[in-house]
Length: 180
Image (cartoon, rainbow, N blue to C red; front, side, top):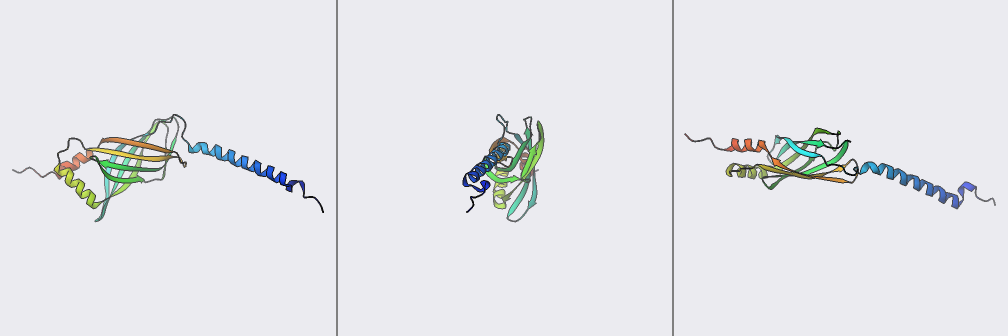
C-alpha cells in the first residue's frame, strides 16, 4: 500500500484549511471597514424643503416629502434604508422611507432625498379638522428616523424639528371667509 500523497495528508489539509480561513477572515475584515463609518463622522443635517400631496384615494392619501441632506464631512456618506416617523403638531402623523434604497451624499454638499409615505384618510381628516379649529401659533413637525451606513449594519439615527410654512398656508385656506 502506498502512503497518501503529501498534499493529501491530514496535517497538510488542516494547514491549507487554516490558510483559507485566515484569507477569508482578512478579506471580511478589509471589506467590513467599508461597513462602518469613519471615527468622528458628523451625521448629515436634514431639513424639509418640499411637502406635496401625490394622490388622494378613498382609504389613504399619498404624500411626497423632500429632505435636504447636508453632508458636513470631507468624504462621501453612503446611506441605505432611510426610514422615518413624522409627527405634526406634536402627534404621530406618518412613517415612511426614502424612494431610493441607497443614496450617496457627496462630500461637503447638500442634495435632495425624496421620500414617500401614505396616511389613512381618516387620520388626515381628523388632522385637518384639528388644524382648522385650533388657533396655532406654531405649526411644528418632528422628523425622526435612521439609516444604515452603506450596506452595513451600523445605524445612523437622526432627529429634526422645525416648522412647515406649507401647513400655515393650508390652515389659512381652510378658514371660512369673513362674513360681510
